[in-house]
Figure 1: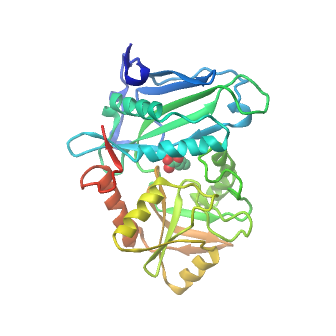
Figure 2: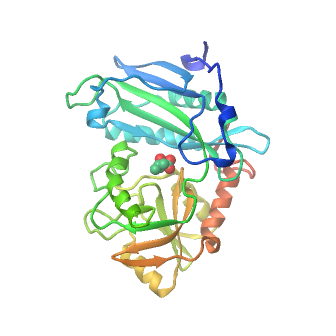
Figure 3: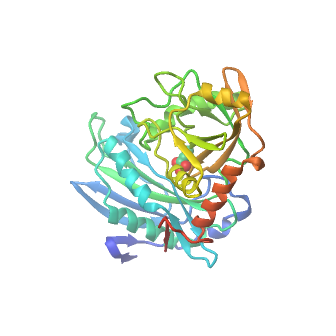
Length: 355
Ligand code: COI
């Protein structure tokens, strides 16, 4: 064992599993790298920061997250530059968001130096796990949850921060088919929709499962009050191109403030393209489709990157989008974003952190 800056104890694995990795067949979230970062919060302090071989975390059935769901998480990606240097995309944004989510669930803030030191050390140690074929990355999943042994309902006094990493390929292999959910809602004003809390995803599973049983990939969520305005799709934010304008729902407090969403809108605006962040009703999308001005619909997310949408079903009617190869805006921004993330072009935004 050796110790690095910020008092992270590092215990490297004695037998790497890297040779078992099939780089040609990477799916999403099935294979985990050699190490994980852990830190604990108790007695009012962060402590026991360590990087150890990936493996199980001990907990008892009374661990509070299992009962009341105080759990938040993040997702970010590491890439390799053309000369093999490890790169992280906008890790500060993930750091800020994990604490916004934590605040919503009454969890103590994670210190920036602890989060960044753990992240950088983990990625350095497992840098050989960063794939470099197109559409691949090392996905890093920070998770933060209550692990006090109590079933009393109150904010816990003990927490676990963990970071694991997995080499991934595309989240969606094909263009995405969405079913507009009419029976369920994802979030309401005052709820947790803008926080990356585990419960949001658990609550979406029933609707997704019903959509999948009908041949769709995921649900397109509408707002909880009017059941009319487009929110997001759970795995990603959404954008539509109508009449050469990129339109996306505003950050109203009920959708996730996506880091990919923010990057995409910045790139579009800097390319001189028209972007509107505003309410967009499902009726407007239907009308645009009928009028022939709905040119593109795509999702934006860390896991999904830019995912073209091929079909949206609403009230039994299917809207079919043009083939993804014809999506000029989505393909343009995907290429630009991937080039920045992999340092193939200069990064004027300071988004890429080189390790
Ligand atoms: C991500 O895009 O990073 C997410 O956390 C979404 C998840 C459904 C994979």
